[in-house]
Image (cartoon, rainbow over all chains, first blue to last red; front, side, top):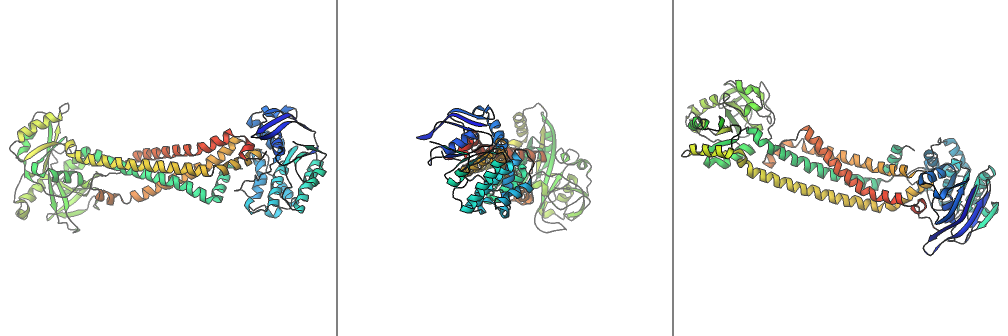
Length: 207
Length: 395
């Protein structure tokens, strides 16, 4: 379903060495490795957020590394849901609006009821009218995950979803990702969290 | 998410940034439109100098040249008098098409008020070509009728007492942009009765045939310098001399042009300052904008839509700032129009609606150019950068 062939990306003195990765449909794959080894870069390349210096990224049989920006954007809104490591909620929108935002841009109907349901399950149901700056770190990351879960894409890429979370919050995130995977969603996650990596079908070492 | 909803929410949540951007557009618009309108009003007043008299030349007593300029262009009330025996001589000169006398009388008397000198302008309805451009009634003005300038409170049908005579206001003239707006026009024959009356002998010495100036219109296709030379040859020996109207107005035009230039410098300075400030503001918020753009793009929002969100926010603030600036200038300049005119001591007349619209268009164009320069930096930065780099994702 998603395949990286001899992907390289150079950043200053570091970067991503030629790497092959293949993730089958419905699989949950963990990416591990030391900090700075290129896990986030790999996820960025696999989700079309970054073009590789060389190599190919095949999603559903098509090479996305050569696609136009417009097509790659479509891909992110409809095929691959991506939760970045950095805070990426829009500061001027409420949590509910942030969760619904990808649905708006993907021209999908904004299902507020479902958004509420996902938020409740991620234990942020009481924060839907708050703004991102009013959330704790754990709540913030769960709101980012809620945004992608609502989008209901066949592939989810999540970068460090449990980092800096309290054990309870981390457990909620792990269970939600596992549940999505059980429902047929392909999940790729970069993480240092051994409990999360244990939930995956297999782990790929980067670097 | 609808662009307008997003924009309004962003503006209400980022109050400081929005206020600064609004103020930059507001201040620039006030400076540009305010100085522009003021300058245009001055130029408009200046352009009316010729139209106001509709004469090519004016014959006045040589010793009263400055007084005549004050009277003619600044509307200062005064009395200038000399005998009109040169009228027939001037009208017979080759190249002179029409000549009409005007007599300026200053009176402190008015039955309705006592707050200073009123300029009475006596004109000859049978030969007049100046007052008639403002009202058709002037040609049939009767001895007991008067015309009022636009600046006073008089209305058609009102009665006033001048030099112990009652006059009915037959019409109110359109605005001329000068002291004429505060003048009252009466027939020359009535003025002649006043100057020759025993009652006002202390002012006019019971004289008839007094004039203050002769308005001279040259024949078409004749050279004004040549005609004025001929007229001055005829007037040699008399106390009067003829001056082309442009020559009389040259000092004033110089002042107006100087003031217009100064206003232009103020405008240019304000535009440059505001542009630099806007550019600085955009640059300071560039990092934040990049991250937001990256967030949106990572969530599947096309770059075009991201830019539309940003541009709409700037355009909204730009529109509100520009409209507020224009409204403020209008609220300030329009009610104080009369006071400004008196304070300036030079021709000042509101531009036409079309002129004002053109000025608004010019102001908005400069504001738009400023906006384009300001946002192009942000937009270019967002367009050329990979989505992941906008978020400054780590390797």
